[in-house]
Amino acid sequence: MATISYTHWAYFRDREAAEACRRDLADYVVRIRRSAADERQWLLLAGRDVEVDRLPERHTEVEEIVLRHGGEYDGGETAYSPTTGGSVPDPMLTEDEDRSG
Image 1 (tube, rainbow, N blue to C red):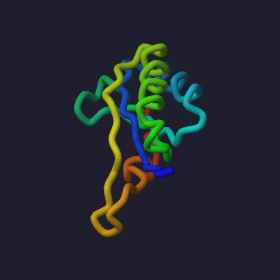
Image 2 (cartoon, rainbow, N blue to C red):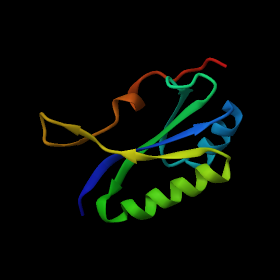
Image 3 (cartoon, rainbow, N blue to C red):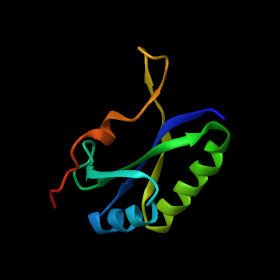
Image 4 (cartoon, one colour):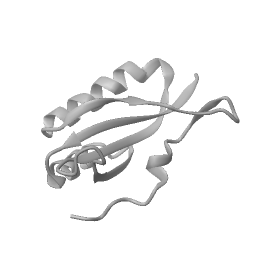
């Protein structure tokens, strides 16, 4: 079965809510940093490889977790490599995590 690297995006008003959401996304690589668009919000990125056929199910699952923690779910995307012609891990997930408070 084909898999792709997929990253979900969510926004939170406070870091504590984002951290609580992170705990429920234990099987994802999660990064939390201040939103570049609105420094009063925290951006949570949650990425992992997912089977293409299970993508709608995983999408719904992550959205429900985000909403349960008071976040705003902003969908997701796959990163594409023009070199390999396939999906690659989201480069934002490989950057150092923002530890500012």
